Image (cartoon, rainbow, N blue to C red; front, side, top):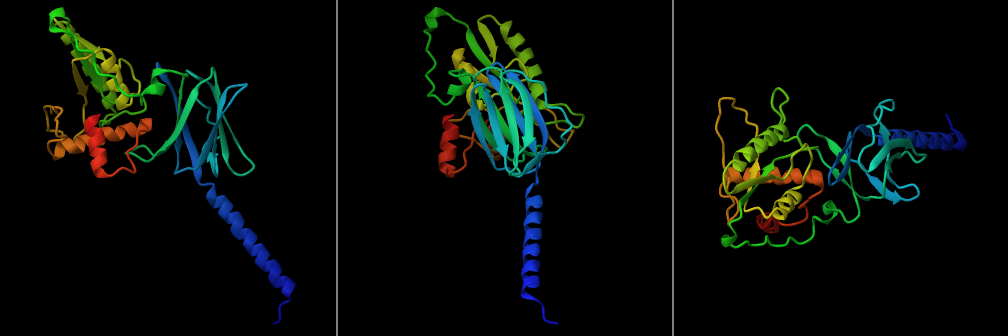
Length: 299
């Protein structure tokens, strides 16, 4: 049977439209599954939990102050779920679909702030995340990449106390290891740090300071800065790592070596703990192994 050219053309056009429509529907595969908001003494962090990798753009607007994030081909997984109450720099979180298929997320600000937005890939039980950090202009958190000044040397004749900085590992959005019954490493380390501080403070000639005394996230660089600001003579980092064999007991102590990690277990631990800084946007991608090793050793 001979077919009319118009019929063939129409079928081709209809078929092409169906393919484009199917592609458009399939492209909207990124869902914002949850929104978490936390405010600390150094700033405010908003975490958007995503169903997959996302492409986004961001801009900061004035009058009123707000941060706008557009995620391409995205949607809210549950449009009826309320957003968290505002705190810190964020007075309100809102969202709305755009004509181009993007999802617009708006952070209404209570005061002007500097924003930094980045994504974090899957890590353990956590999936893809889009993180927005807000800090005040000129705040300490905005200058953590500035060169570190040497700790001032105090002559022994002054007889000052020996200062010990105790660093409770993890915190805030970084829970650390999670036990079978839901025990979080960040809570265990903070409890240990507080008890250790009390014990040290009872020793004549010694005084302890905590890098964190609440459930907040601190990048490794900020932990170092806080210890240096107190002119600490010693830095102790407390962790409570998980292990599969419940019969294992005891503790492990790692001491800074001028030649880096001393054995395979120490190298594994260093890689695991430095990876936690990805939550704070610290990345070593693009640098060769030797340079990464040097940078971590210097830190």
